[in-house]
Image (cartoon, rainbow, N blue to C red; front, side, top):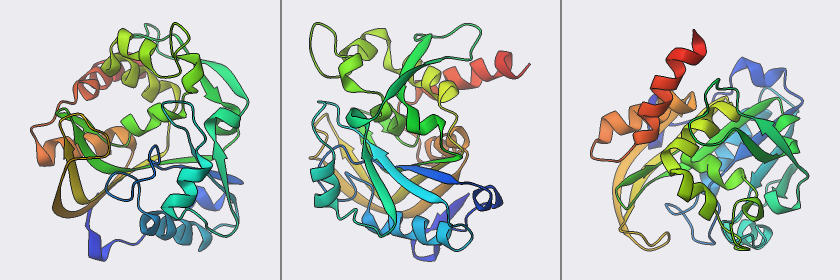
Amino acid sequence: MIYKTAEFTFKAPTAISRARRVLIKPSAGYPVSYPVATSRQMLSTIIEGIRQISDADIILLDGTSGGGPIHPIYQALGYDFPRVLTLDVKDCVCVEVDNPLPKPLAVSTFWVPNVILSSDYLISVAPLKVVKGRGNMSIMNLLSLLPAGKYGGEGKVSWDLLHQMGMDRVLADLYFTLPFDMGIVEAHQKFESSGDPIQGEVSEYGKVFLGEPFEVDSEVSETLGGMKTEYLELIREARIGFES
């Protein structure tokens, strides 16, 4: 669904009323405010909507590509919500999870924080970013849930190994392995960069996209056009065999 930013309120789905733990994945890799990071206002709106129908535990979880601590970034971004637990991927116990696809595109198993598996409802909340022409939306946002130290290669702490496998294929595999219930793309503004993750051009757009992550990213891609989103086509093709 597409909303005008000024009219957006988060109406929590009924499934959340039955949840004991709701996990929200913001985009918080850098201590730079929206549209580089998920805005505090958007998270506050989502949390308020959850609280209207549920007293579930709410967790914010993210990590950095360099393996540095995330809590100073949470603090800089104002993620200081009452009764909300903020966690760092690097401090979590990680477990190896099988990719359910019969023929994985790149990665047969992923190391993921155990808290994801013990959560009942998963929400990815990302700003609308286009970096080097690549659409950076709710599914791309899941990448920083992977512990950087497991994918550095040659002692590096980054996602070098994942890039070597082909990032679009990795993202498609990750989509099936981490079945998030909801994706939200915060498109009040659009951030475009030629490569720098924190410096770029910002333009007004005035929209919020909400729904199942694949459907949301597809809708954003179709609405805006001109973005590289090969991972969406890979997911679409893999879905046919997986669902049959």
